[in-house]
Length: 484
Image (cartoon, rainbow, N blue to C red; front, side):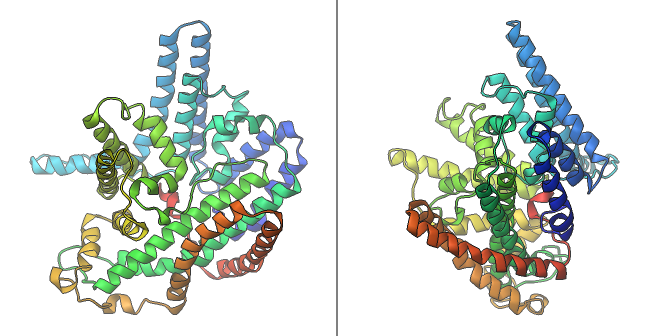
């Protein structure tokens, strides 16, 4: 089930909110758990067993950590935490990376003249990367003493299953919402703010991301792109596809985050922000402080710092930074595209850190447009089906000099360009940069000015109605981050 569907809007959400508000506060965690299981199980009920198993495994391991610490046995506490973390990560490794590992092993075996391994296809459970990371952070925080253990398995299970952020984030940490599970109040202001945030995110997804998606798909989904004898695309094809995907990904994922934060607010939860206008960043270091903030901070706190951070010398600092980004790339997907995407960003971060050391610790400022161009090169790796197709798209930007089909649009792509998609793409770019102005104006506005700004938010209502009407006329379009 997805937020941008009639089933969710007109059946699941009204029933869930009705049951949630009718239930006494002490039973609301149970309503969250049952509702979230129904939300997740609508896709495949059998994967609920894995979902529940990961939660139970980590919860029991963390109980073991606390009991061992109460006895003064730090060795046993560490062992219990390791069991919980390794078990959770093992489930992620099997479902997400086993096929990738066997595929590459078979390439090696073929080169040695040996028979390949035969492995049945593995279906990737939706959202496994997100809920495993949340479970791992809980186990580590309990071990570090940064978070109190959950009052009950019900609270912990409801935290992991919380459907607004279950399948595509933000990546929550129990210590940030533990108090809210113990007690939360819901006023009319929370409902109004949450509903407005949800409607804004819904409009981002349906009216913008889904509208520009065909422009990116027209190039990236060409059959045989990058293969020998495959289709040739022009520089205009590649440029349009890259810009369209840059816009699509931003509005798709930030839209999902807005919807998740809005739904959480309607339930009395205050989630941390996940985006801060990343496309206005002046360098890649700043970009990663603004893009997918919950994942960036997770990688820093649970990977980069435990690896040694910047405490073990310059060479080790660069290695840790690079490894963190490579593993962050692999978290997004089991393919060499994502590995190279992590390498790309890890290398850029390393270059900025080195130049910053020569400037007294301040990273260089490339400017918003050059930084965005660097990000867009990475998005080609992120979107392309494989490395040859990514190379074909990047190579096409060189026009005839690199053997592509000229500077213009190729017939294979031109017939797929629609006026509506092109219009939305043109309008969306000012929205990306105008949103930063709106956030600053909102943050500094006093009472009379803020009231005027709030009135502008009423525009979400007709836009939301239009989005619902468009939703009824288009095919199913899942969020991009569902695949991770």
